[in-house]
Amino acid sequence: MLPYHGDRDLSDYSFLVTGGAGFIGSNLVEYLLRYGARKVRVLDNFSTGFMSNIDRFTYHSNFELIEGDIRDLDTCVRAAAGMDYVLHQAALGSVPRSINDPITTNNVNITGFLNVLMAVKQEKVKRIIYAASSSTYGDSKELPKVEERIGNPLSPYAITKYVNELYARVFAQTYGIETIGLRYFNVFGKRQSPNGAYAAVIPKFISQLMDHQSPVINGDGATSRDFTYIENVIQANIRAVFASNPDAVNQVYNVAYGERTTLTELAQYLKKLLSNYDAAIADVTIEYGNERAGDVKHSLASVEKAKELLDYDPLYSVEDGLREAINWYTREKRSAEVSKL
Image 1 (cartoon, rainbow, N blue to C red):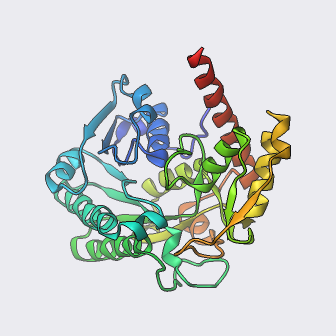
Image 2 (image 1 turned 90 degrees about the vertical axis):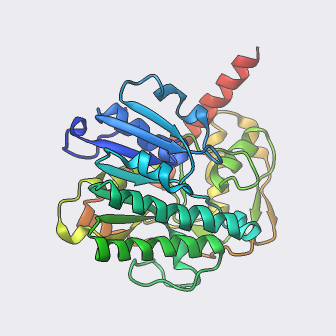
């Protein structure tokens, strides 16, 4: 059962989830429907999301899907019509993708975000919660990362996510709309795809280890991240939606667990946990390659601001989250194997 993150009756409210067929978006959709939201509308163009993430929801009477692109303003306005809140998750993620194709990343993440803001303004949506990014901290070496102090961006992706924050601030000041940005730190969990050139490290490593392939760590393995389980992210979104303290609105918050894990430690955790399902995984070796361009060496979040103003209280540590994620990936693998019989 998904933990409940508040005391509001969701049946009073309608939500638009942009990018709702993606990893984070589909988990938000599941939560909102499970706890009785009056309407959950998804806007997605399926460029990185998957119908398989939401097909179980399409039969729900409170669910609606609009297949469309946030780069089209009219589509955004239609999607926002009648909504109380927008949870904006649609974006082209991945630092390497943005380095390979900065123009598309810019068009989706900046023009698309501006269109969503315009739709929120025109349709008089109560509040927009948008996915910001820890990449905004750039070359800042300060640890832990504190919201009010950032460095210089290291990738086109990081630039686009910082511009989102600037646009949100200007729209709040100029048009009076309510915005809250959530700087996600390396989110992982169920429905995160292990496939493709830009797959995140945790699902990619889990998939490789389950196939007895050696995961390749970029760099010397000392690179560290504040890996954050999806359920902590859902909690932050729901707390941000219903935050009643005026000081909490028109702010940006770190969303993380507040603990640093190196990539070598991560790979070792995964080997240990997966060995409970397949003892042979303990013998799979870890390999090391070149560091990736645009990557930040260390990342660790301060979550004090979110705790104070949003009442954020992350429930899942990295190891807790990895156990939950591995349970899901192993079930999916077994299901796929059975379906082939």
